[in-house]
Each structure stands twice: as structure tokens, then as C-alpha cells.
Image 1 (cartoon, rainbow, N blue to C red):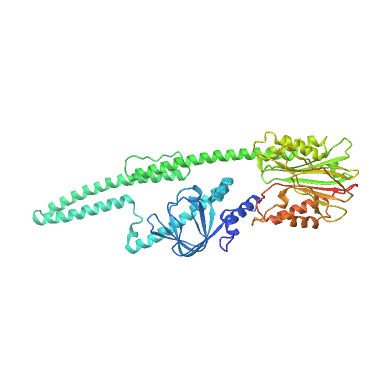
Image 2 (tube, helix red, strand yellow; image 1 turned 90 degrees about the vertical axis):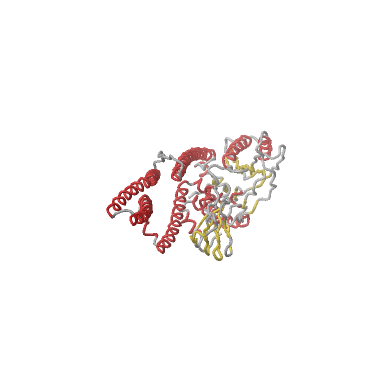
Length: 532
């Protein structure tokens, strides 16, 4: 959801997103999770002390900040500003009540989205903290400005640049001198001569001055030490410990700063540990992705220069590793029969990738000696054994006699492939879907056959293609997928596959890839296919 002020451009600048695919995905995810809310005059948007579950961006109108005592702090929030970010990020209770001043429109962002974003991008986390600090500083400056204007009215601002110790000493001295003048004046009037009065007054003044100076030092010195030590912490010296002796308010403040320093050190330590662990996991996942990619067959020169078949295949995981896979290989030493496999394991990530390795190995081993239907039956029974996580895999298997054009195939719960016969349009193959492998032991699968002629085409795919989603959550669908296939049906396999993937990318419009996308384009040519 997008407004005139809180737009996609606003969010991109707010979170400092670049134009990388990951950043575009996060931006679209945030925009999709913004919830529009409206509040009439004097309605409370969020309450002091409540546990924060979201932050807010003001689209229109103004809001006022109230303190714990429900009195206005006189800081107005306007369109384009935000609030509730600190509590949403930390999970703490809110430190203020926000009330609508007139009609207000806001966008609410759930804290879970915010936290996921920050955990996955520490650079953005640092920038976000800087934004929070900047806004809080601006709010403090607004408040200081209002208070300063009031001080000027009462003349209080005259003393803003005087040290606290000097103020204290001046107050004590002023009160003492005033008292002495009154007492001495009365005494002088009744008993003393002028010289005696001046001497007594001078001695008492000196004593009061000294006492005022000592008293002021007992207050100002701890504050000066506190300022020096806090400045060290601010410059990055987290080993500093602020002396905390006594039982006054300054000691309480020093203890609070010491706790803050300890918490900050623990947070940095945990952040470093989490970052190191994340880097290690990412490194291992990168290696796993390379291993998985190496397990999938590549279009070698042998297949590119084939006189019988044009072929192209590709797997694009939604995460670093995926559960989709494809396979193709010759079934005999004479290279007269080719096997094609495409499959989709339930779930994504590491578990799906491990299950994929098992399924791929079993399918290839059995295809070398059994027909497609028998292969599915045997592999299904093996996958059902000790399958405590109830994982399964949908599979389409076929074998092609490249000299005769006879295609034998069987389906285990997979999407219906596209097929174009005799130069016609692509259509969905008519076949029974069957059950996925690993669900129920003892399932039977039907063996089917089809005669191919030169120029006939077959396009195998996983549901990441026809179920690709745009930012609004709408799927591409079979109809649009079929229309795109027929639009580019005259292209060779590789160019055809690239055209279909471009259609998917344009439809997704930056939305996060929700599932693995795996495709295999096959053309039976029975003559050498020129690859440009």
C-alpha cells in the first residue's frame, strides 16, 4: 500500500535501499505490509507504557506527543514524520502517548518486518539507529526551543551560560548576605559603631563565601567527572567506569550510565558473535549452492551439437539452495535413448536440498534399468521409508528414443508439461497427475507413450513458473504462462527459456521470489540444431 507522502520513494530513502535485487525485494515487502489507519481529533494512536508491536509513518495531519502524566510535551509530529520506531525495534514499552490533533492518517509497519530487515542487513541497522538518533535530537531541540522562549519571557535565560557550581554558590551567598545585612543592620542600629559593624560584616561575608564555594564543589565536581567519563564513552572507550560513591542523585545517574555501558558492551559482543555466525553460515550455504549446482547436468558440447535433440535447462533457487532439480542423461552406451527428469521437493532451503540429493540419486539409478512408471513406483517406496518429516517430491520422468521419436513418460504429482506438436501452439499435456513420491507407499503409476516428429517441442517446469507472484500477491497463472509460451514458440530452446523467464521477471515487478524456478526446454529435431 502506498500513499502520496509515504510512498515507495519515501521508504527507499528512509531505509537507504539501493537498486540491488535483495533491496528491491525488501522494499516491496515493506510496502506490501504497510497498513493504512485513520484517527479523528483527540483519538490516541498509541499509549504510554504499552508493549510496542509496530511503528508509524504519518501520511496526513498532525499528532501531539504526551508524556507519562498525559500532559502535552508540545512537540508536533507532521506528515512525513514517524514515531514508535525505538520501542518497535527493542520490544520495550512505549515512552509516550501519541494523540491525533485533528484528523490524522498513518501507515503502520509491523515490528516483525522491521526486525527481520535489521537482522538481515547490519548496514541498514546502523543507518536506522542514526535516523532514530537524528529524529530524537530534532525533537529535543524543538522542546528546548520552546522552553528557551519561555525562559526569555521570565528572564531566566540570562543565567543559561553560567556554570551550575557558580549558580549554587551565588544563591547561597546571596541568601546569606541578605540575612546578614538584615541582622547586622538591626544590631548596628542598637549597639555597634560603624567600624565594628564593617569588620564583623567582612568576616561573616568571607566565611559565607568560603562555605558556599565548598558546598558548590561537592555538587559540581561529581558532575564534571560524570561529563568527562561520558565523553570518553561517547568516543568509543567502553572500558570506562564512572565512579559512583554516595547515595545522592548523581550517584544514581552514574550507576545508570555504568549499566548502560555494560549493556552496550554485551550488545556489541552479541552482535559480533551473531554477525560472525551469519557470515559462517552464508559461507557454508554458498559452498552448498556450488555443490548443488555442480550436481545438476550442464549443456555440454555433446548436447549442443546433437543431431537429434535441442536442449536447455536451468534451476534458479528462491534461497541459496533449493529443492527443485532437473536431470538428463543417456540410458545406453549407444546414446540412442535420452532420459529427462524434472522435480520439485516440498519446502525450501537446506532440508529440501538434502532430500533433493537423495531423490535425484535414486531416480537416476533406477532409470538406467527400468521404464519411467516402474522407476516412480520403486523410488516412491524407498522415499516413504523412515520419512519422519513427511517430505515429498513431485516428479515428471520421460525417456526418448532419439532415432524413432517415441517418448515414454510417467508423472508423479508434477505440473503438466507444455507440448507443441506438428508446428502448432503449445498446449498442456493430457496426463494423470498421480501422487507425489514419498507420500503413500505402494502407489502405482501409469506409463504413457507419445510419438514425436521433427520440430515437436516439450517444456518442463516447476510451479515457481506459473505460480510466480507480483507485489499484490497475484499469481502469473496458467493462462498467462501459456500465452507467453505461444508468443515465443518459434525460438530455439535456450532463447525460448530466456523469454519465459523475462516474462516472469516483468510480472513479478520486484516482488521477492517465493519459490524455486526450474525449467527444461526440449526440441526433437532429428537433424543438427544450430545454436547461435
